[in-house]
Length: 49
Image (cartoon, rainbow, N blue to C red; front, side, top):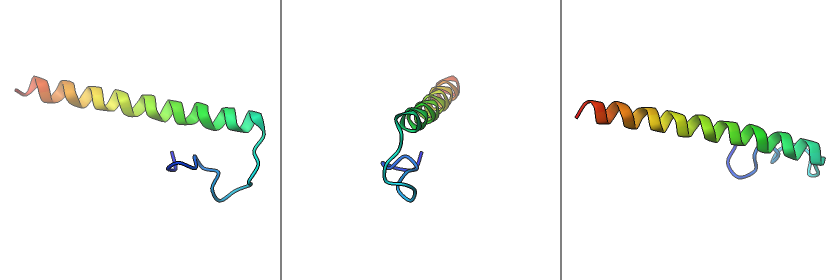
């Protein structure tokens, strides 16, 4: 996402519970997408061996 601040570093200092949940859900989705990309790349590399 945006490093360790998860997008809130330059905004408000205090987020609502709902905002925190949404940020975490977005961050989780980004991590899952990254993990899928890594898995895909591993399969490609293994196939070429």
